[in-house]
Length: 176
Image (cartoon, rainbow, N blue to C red; front, side, top):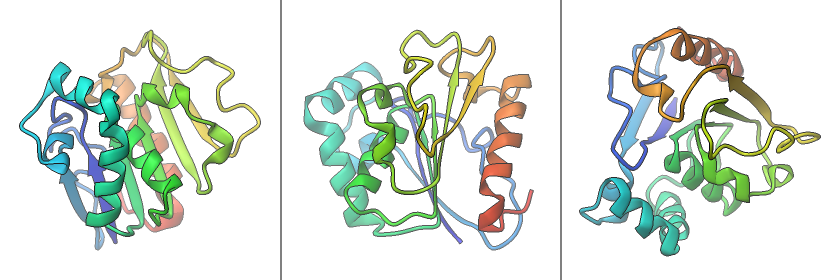
């Protein structure tokens, strides 16, 4: 089973705190940083500004070139926004998971053609409004007390998200 993981602008999470790490079965995970995907030596705020100035679309095109299809796409922050745009442009996935992908607030949640899970911390000031995604097919999780980068540490919010994510991916035969 092929899985694509796109990190955030800082190359996070680590391999150890990626929600797909340590899973059993025949899972093949390709983890890619956004700077690497775009072929630019940028990180952090510099990479974020590059993405805002047309880089999101360029990154989505690179995902299509590089991957074509996979069973699962998992993106953290800006990585989730890139995967979202990639699916809308033709990337074939069975399931999409977007973690703290706050740029989705500018996307139409009804346009997503595949099952998708979005996860945000309720302390993330940049998350979409509470009504974003209502009436769509999205599965949404709002973690109480969680900040934007809750995914970098294995704490209670990480564990809750991991459990929900595994349940969401169960139709793909993911083994914990």
